[in-house]
Image (tube, rainbow, N blue to C red; front, top):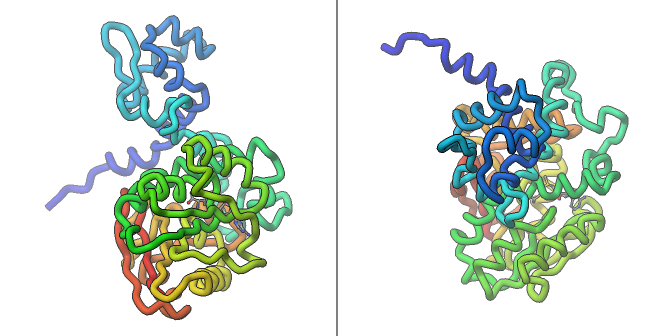
Length: 336
Ligand SMILES: C[S@@+](CC[C@H](N)C(=O)[O-])C[C@H]1O[C@@H](n2cnc3c(N)ncnc32)[C@H](O)[C@@H]1O
C-alpha cells in the first residue's frame, strides 16, 4: 500500500512560486534576450535591470525548473524556451503567459470570493457585463488577449490542421477566431482550403496582420460580426475553439444550432477546448479552466464530451465523436 505523503500537497500548494517565476521571466523578456546569445550572470542581470540580491537565485531557479541551462557560467535557453518564448519567432506562445501575468494572476487571488459568490473577479467587477467589452475597450489589452489565445491554442490548432480529414471539404470558417491561428494552420497544412475567420469587428486588423505574416491573404479572409446577433457564415466546416465555455447553457445551445444552420448536409462542426472527461475526475486542466471561466465570465463553464455531443444531437447532428488532440485538449466533431 502507498503510504500517504506530503510532497504532492506542497508542490501544488506552493506551485505559484514556480509559476510567478516563469511569468516574471516572460514579462522581462529574458528568453528573447538569451535567444540572441548566451550571457553570463553580470551581463544578464544588467540587461534585465535586476537587483544583485535577486539575480543569481532567479536565473538558477529557472535552471532548476528546466527553463534555462547553465554551462561554464553562461546562461542559455532550453530548446523549448528558445522556440516558444523568444518574442521574435512566429512560434512564440508567451502571449498567453503575458496575459496570465498581468490579468489572471491577480484575479485568481480572489478565487475564494468567486467560489462563495459565483461572481466573476476580473474587469467585469466594475460593472461591465460582457468580458469582451471590457478587454476590447483598450487596444493594448485586446492585442495581448488575442495573442494569448494563439498561445493557448497553437498545439491543438496544429493537431486539427494535420489530423482532421480535410480532403473531404473545401471551405472552413473559424467562429470567434481571435488572431486567426486555427484557420491559418488549417490553410497552411491544406492548400486546397478556403478559410474565413469570423469575430467582432475590432479583431479584424490583428487577424489580418497574422494572416498576412503567414502569406495567406489570398485564401483566408476576415468576416466581421457577432455570433449573438447574426447567423454564422456558411462553410463545409464550422469550427469553434474556446467559445462555448465562455457562455451559459442557453447561449451554448444557440451557438450549436447556428453552427448546424451554417453547414451543408455532410458538413462538419468541430468544437475544441480542454473538454472535461465524462467522469469529471482526470482532466484537471479542463476543470481548472472551468474555474477560470468562473473568474472571467458572468456564467460560462467548461463541459464534458458527452455534454457537447448531447447538444449537437439535440440540434440535429446525425453523428458525433470525441477525439483527443494534445495535452488537455480534445475536439468534439458533429456531422450534419
Ligand atoms: C476565448 S477566445 C477564443 C479564441 C480562439 N478561437 C482560440 O481558441 O484561441 C473567444 C473569441 O470569441 C470572440 N467573440 C466574443 N464574443 C463574440 C461575438 N459576439 N461574436 C463573434 N465573436 C465573439 C472573441 O473576440 C474572441 O476572439
